[in-house]
Amino acid sequence: MNEKIEQNFLQKHKKSLKERIQIRKNMLLRNLKRITMYAAMQCAATLPQPGNAQGETLSSQPDIIGKESLISKEEKLKQAMQERKEWLINNEFFSKIVKYQDILKSKSPQEKKNYIKKNFFDTIYPIGGIPKGSNYCIAAAMRCLYDINQETGDLEKFMPDGNTIEGHSMVSCPMFKEYIKKNFPDCIIENPSKDEINALENGDFIISRSNSRNTTSGLHFTTVYDAQKGLEASFNTDGIRAFKPEKIESIVKFGKIIDICLQEKVKQMDEHSAFLAMKSGVKDNKDYQLTAMNFRQTSQKSADRS
Image (tube, rainbow, N blue to C red; front, top):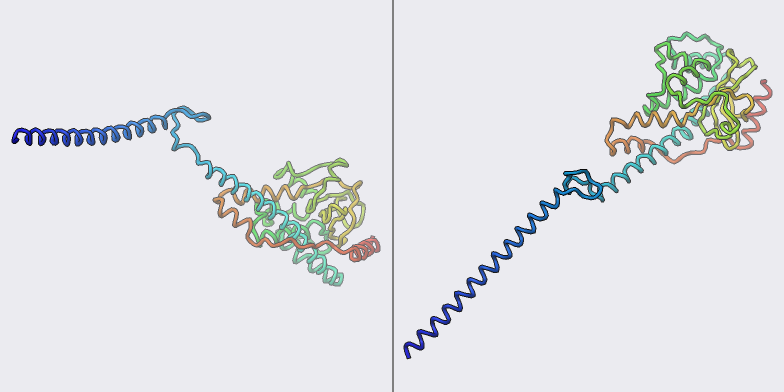
């Protein structure tokens, strides 16, 4: 009887021992499997992947979501720069043209001369000593751009230094052309074709041949005010009028110059700061185009003076 009990005890003990051994063996196998899988993943990460350079690791590859986000930021910045360019032309530039034309029309001949001397010539080209009564077709337009740059800094790369002889390009049509050829050679079109004239855009500068008393060089500077309607903004003969394609000698693509200036401005900024800089101050574009009645009145006044 005692022998039978002892045999049962031994059998149970052996069974228990086998179960414990099997449990430990299973744990060891699971741990070994995990270690093997981890080692295999680390090894695979160091192998060349399709489209990758030899030796690049998976961790060195750009995150797909991050790349899509980066592209989106770049596109948003481009869009913001385009919107800012349109705002600078259609809002800022045109509003200042209208403002200065209205001021000049409100003054007597002598008051007008004094105003032009002080606020155009002496402001943008103080060392020039330009006398009263000088033609101001380009000086007035450059005063508008001077104001824009003072307010925004967007045209810093474009504006000539009025405290040096370079400032002469802001009061002389021939000198302006030379300045553009030197600093923005891809932005000027000489002797434009019919197609190039048809492709004029708002804000473009036109330099036309002129035989009127309003020029000293035989050239006259105007700004495309409404390309679709064929209108230009003109100083000397202050107003908005139809431009004459047959008299156009040169075209300066001002929108292209703005693109260069804005690219230069954001170059040293991170993407977030650049985006904020392009959106800063930009409001919905206003319509500064004259009504049909105002255009007829302006055209008639210009005709009466010619």
